[in-house]
Length: 75
View: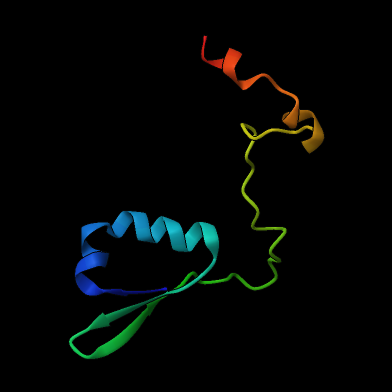
C-alpha cells in the first residue's frame, strides 16, 4: 500500500495498527522519496506465534450461520 505523508499524518495511529495487525508494510511518499513503515519481526516467531486471539468471533460451522434468522437479532 502506498500513501503520501499527509495521509499518514492524518491517521498515524490507524496506519500503525494496520501495519502491526496485518504484518504488511506501507510505503510513504515524502518530498520525492519513498519511506517504508513495516513491522519488525522478532526472530524465531512464526506467523502462527504472532496470531492475535479473537474470542468475539464466531466459532461455528459456516453452514449454521446461513440458517440464522438475522432479522430477529435486532429486537
